[in-house]
Length: 158
Image (cartoon, rainbow, N blue to C red):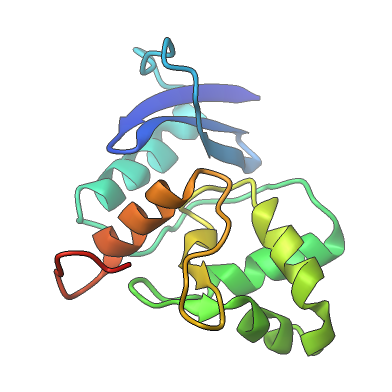
């Protein structure tokens, strides 16, 4: 498994993967971590696509993913991947798409365990009342990502 670190507007992101796909993308809280000087061949395309996303040159990702998780988590992450750029859905919407509104808590838990930051857009899931709700990377990052993707520039989205 190879690892690359890249600079983003939200901090240093860690990308882990190999020829089988990307297993994990996360934002690191380690302030001493520096961007990688050399990027493994298997990570060059994911790095390029993330940089394009943050430069507003990309709205979708086309990279091979290989996250570890339960079957249920993978179903949730698959649903998250279908949320269009610039749009949001609620946790209840995700649970309904999975076929059972009663799975809302399990869906929210799987959303919180998403190992593929930004690429699987868990930041696009909000509360049923439109409020920003929990986000592993911090609510300020969630707000930034939603504003980054918003087609209408406002003073503040939330």
